[in-house]
Length: 147
Image (cartoon, rainbow, N blue to C red; front, top):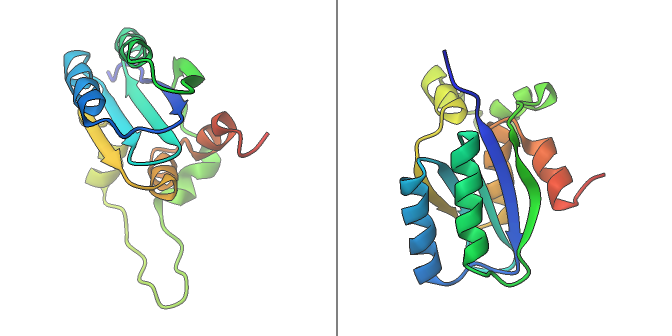
């Protein structure tokens, strides 16, 4: 039986300090969570998922780093995959682009994430990962992009 997955979302002014990123990476390993960071510019966005206790502990570690304009935009809660987002796992064929079929292994990886920390360069890429995880609508609402 798979244990329930909890997640949280944090927005900051920016994430540029390599020392803080290193601290977040160590905390992700310590608390056995998967953390996703949009670093290198404005805004800084952090997504974390794991057990309820571990997500809360990792969020506490982020808070302790005193990021500028720290906002816990989505408190730790049980992750629910949005049914409307399921089709986002299958990219749409636009123009002459080839559609990449998502394999069962990739789908399982999206549902059962590796632990540790991963950095992403743009908010657009970050949103795409949220779509692959089936939480794109949740992400957009938490960030204030939709109501």
